[in-house]
Length: 542
Image 1 (tube, rainbow, N blue to C red):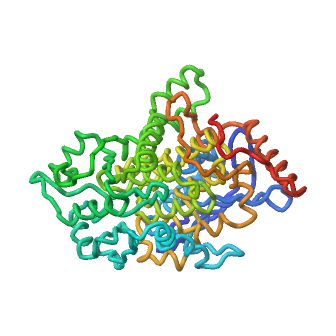
Image 2: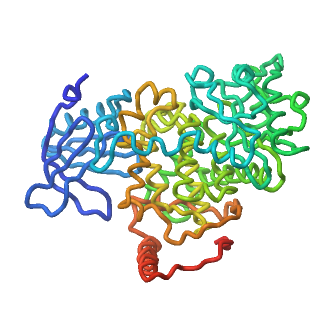
Image 3: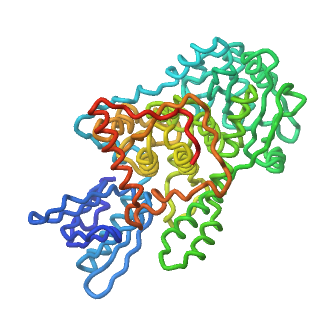
């Protein structure tokens, strides 16, 4: 189907209202295959306004007299209003936006057409391959190897081609392990903690079923993980489901690791919300933040009722538990829920941020997102199909990645010197995960990206974000490398609403944001003068 077939009206005269702080724009509104454009005209001082249509989450239209209004609620939480001359033009433009913003084909999406100046296809796609992290692990221990048993994605469609596994376990054993785990997601290395020699692993649930099946190769893999750590090492299996939910999973073929079958491993249950309840919490939070008419008491009551900060607390608490097992108790930790593609990745990535100083650098955090979310098989195409405004409520949508970004923001707020990146990077990742001109977050697995030729036909987000002109918006000017673990406070009274995201478009810039730009200027001036600020690496919590 050609894009032109979906465009009922190509242009109309319109006025754009972008929020309480932005002046209205008047000009010619144009609809293209991927964008909505407003040209203010040759006499105007403002630039061309552009909106990627994939950013539209929901659309409402109403007509009155000889004009109409279209309200666009966007995936980045913006609310835009278009006042359009002509009833027919209003209805035709609304239908065009509805059709073009909901196209499901990956290869007709804008990243396959985006060709920015200064970037070449293929740039930055090679920045974070599994082999790169394995080289780091290999320098620290020889107990692990890089296996290409999943080269053709036949063993596990949601894993990358290469995974890090115990050296003592051969590929034939891995194939049998894969048949014993949901979706083929057998235990693989997520993080090696050099100081203790122990590891963080991730997988999906074992398929024990009502008959309490066992798999000798799976049991051997986890024994090898303990043996590769240090003599006498023990392990914890951190299940992100409740004990009751894990027990019920046996009815449908899932289950948990039997204690007798995995000596040296102790199972812990730390239930984390996922799926539709998490999406509903996100929706209710955005609704509360957008209601500017209510009293402060009622607003705080709504904020508490949506339970979003409770989800942040539980995610950070579980990540701290995993990090404590690896970093303080010298144990190996295996994290899994049911599928192993949502709350599992949330816990393993946050635990690494807590323990690993390199993950808190700009390059290290990008590698963490690439390795623990994108390559690890988080289904972005499904989870981020809609944001908080869509009237559709598919069960497969969930803001798990947004919850991760919120937790990272909480870490940055409590440890303002320890992260090399700032809020700007987190906001950019949120926006691009839901709609992007880059191909990094397209599809739901490496197998799908390979079939769609994403790496050869689209640009990598990392190549865009790492341009020098972008770095000022993304970096933390106060960053000082901190070699220690950062242990956050997870009490609810210490957690804060992420105003920079949830109130971003409905309130004026806070004094703190103005001060942030001033800090950048001070730091830049000091570096120009050859004077570096000195700050203790072991900063206090705020």
